[in-house]
Image (cartoon, rainbow, N blue to C red):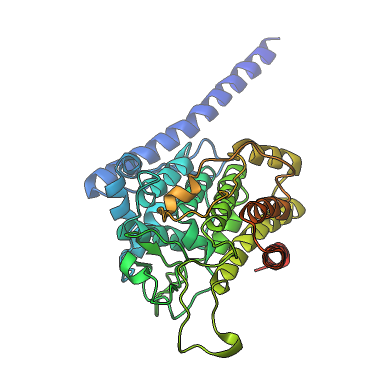
Length: 396
């Protein structure tokens, strides 16, 4: 019995030593790193690990956490500049592998502080718009840490007009963001930055690609990454549906752009009409909704989403409600932040994940209330249908 007791005492001592040995090792490592940081004045994430069986996590620097309450400083920190000279600094701040604790959420809050307008009625500044490009470029094909996705999704929702019109990288994009003057419509009422733009608002040009550099933003890829988080999915889906209602109510009774003026130099079948660019914009919105549903299905098929029913329930919980277009033509041109913050028209109805039907319900009600000619309403319905299916099935 005495031998058994000795074995038991030795085992307990070894277990205690094992537990505290790991703690001592981590304490020595942390102390050494902390001393080095004090000596150099450098703010970098501390690497911590609970035990040898778990991968290390990285603490968010206190200076980064402080940016969540300092929007102007956050904008400066994430603004890469017109020449992208600060792009490495933006990446260093945002690309932290496996942040400890609430680190991912903090990074999302920093993104929001840097890029979002302070209120729905406030236009984005040029620096904020550049910072939005910097965030998208930094996260391009990077893994978004857990907890960060909702904050980045709120950023994209705040720039829904710019995000919805993203097509591909193009030589036409000269800068990562442009002033309101550069985005203003031409004498025919056309601008590549969209319709019904707010006066005085800067716009992010997600199509920009840095010449001879590696800074480019791909919102389509970023949305695919964010859509794995049900809250982020709901934020993006709400923004697109709100934008759809916002857009429809500003069209004429025939579904055209009220600011359109014919170009006297355009002739023949390829000449633009009042419905040319609205049709393109409606395609972009419907395709974005189809994209979201494509990512939802692909994540479930590939095992990224373990329980699709639970995912859908979570999305529905985070979704604000239903959006409807006004029964009369609206002439206001609010900033982009007002679009995603648009009040809901009521509770959700029908299958939320049937995105095509959600769009049709809004379009049909608008056409009926506005007295849109039957042929035009049918054509718009077909445009939305084709674009939604294209977004649902085409892979990028």
